[in-house]
Length: 145
Length: 406
Image (cartoon, rainbow over all chains, first blue to last red; front, side):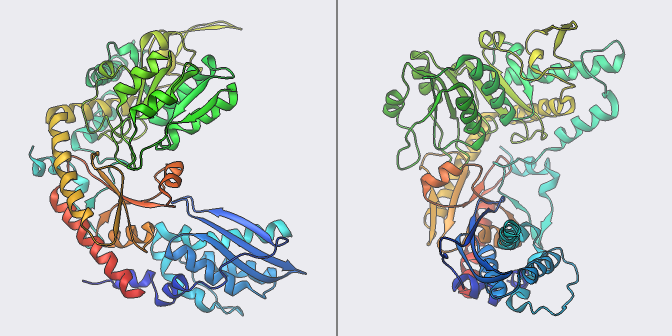
């Protein structure tokens, strides 16, 4: 029995974020809160962002979902924390390119753990799970700007 | 019933998915199509394509005969008393919306009640929410027993003289519950309410007799019963339909059109505005022929044996929760402990097994079950005990895989 194909989706680092999510929880009342549904399954994710002077000072998430949506939320909050809003949006763009299977220019942005999600692009039914948290973040900072 | 011979009628089943022979367990979402249905649609487009009911020319007559012939097949299949009671729609959703827009908005007022159940598909909830908002009527939910069945005592307590519409699904697409439609309809009628039935999951799998059930409206889809997508049926009692206004206005449904006023065609055409779904109806007719040749009782027996076997294997599976009652239609909704159904479905897909994962268009029921999502395996006439074995094997691998990564 071979799970090679599945292993491109469920990388070790994804499972680590799923099992030990970073930044799970909520922020103070004045933080931005964005609710987002995964239209394929109804999973709901909530992203909390503390944005000051164009900097994402803190980011947290809550909700229930599959391994891909929750690990992606965990990685996303980790990646954008402390970054400029512009850079966070830039990362989001790189992430959608990655999901579309496009070549990702390394640029000057370090993707870190996020790169582990590259394999999702080979599972079209799961792309929406991976992009959910990023879409919520984009919506949040879009409202802020 | 010769399942091997039946499977040969479904070319799509004969393929590999991710290196494994396909096991299709998502017929509750949509069934596969036999060659006879595919050919009926193809023949129509190749030989008879024309618009209907305008037939001075030969093709027009042929298309009309086939389209109206399909209506007669539907009438006979569900035992409606007349083809005037058989309206072709886009599917169950459109059928229910037709009743909610036409009948409900004309007959409901403040203080009236619409009674539904928490197990309904969104398409049998939202049209009523909207109708209630538009008329000032209120929506009332029948309680469910812990196993996901309906207690007739609750039905008698919930339906009152204020109840004008009772809308219940015949078979649950999540729990597999088979609801006592005839008994509920009798209570509805005692209080002067009409009975609307969502038959999307029943008509494909069992003999349905709308006169015996004594329901007032019965809705179902073609694509879940071996027919094409985009075609469905609204059955309605003639005296009700006669007094209802059309929902869509335009071509095909008119009698006389004046500058400021128009009159409608007689039943059933007054509800079929625009060029109808001709090929879809013909395909549905072919699907009914296909199912009738095999025999609905034979299909039902086959599915009963299959679900009994599947329930035996699934219920003894360690770490698996099965939702719904013991007595059920041929589907199983479940969750593996600590594995999200999305992940289960992905691992099963890697093994060539197609199941559904998500909320199954039944969010209120998911809340009732206290889960966000579930996986569902649903069976039809072409499924075999080997398919059940492959599913169980796939679930073992899912458990093993997620056990390993944790």
